[in-house]
Image (tube, rainbow, N blue to C red; front, side):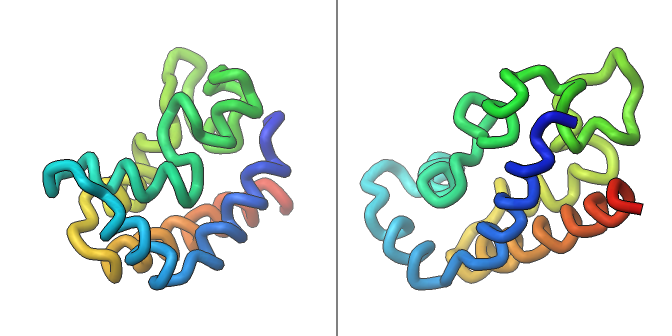
Length: 121
């Protein structure tokens, strides 16, 4: 796990995002009202996305070195949105309002804290 520091920082970021920040970016989006809007907002707020994700970048996109890999088999990749991690990941991607997105960020942070507890035992 080479990205534990970034993992902890991302938890704090998810917990600190304010609705005002989300709304500002939500209204700044000028494309069609699609999933691309959520990608735009999440990327600007947290570097969300497999190319720009701070966790992915820290491990040079080697999923086996990521904190999310703790409960997975060596042949798997993209642990961040598989298994027990999928619900909170998909909630962020499927948010349809700024309030839903904020709630999704908070839920993801809470989930990440449970992973952190497993690691720090």
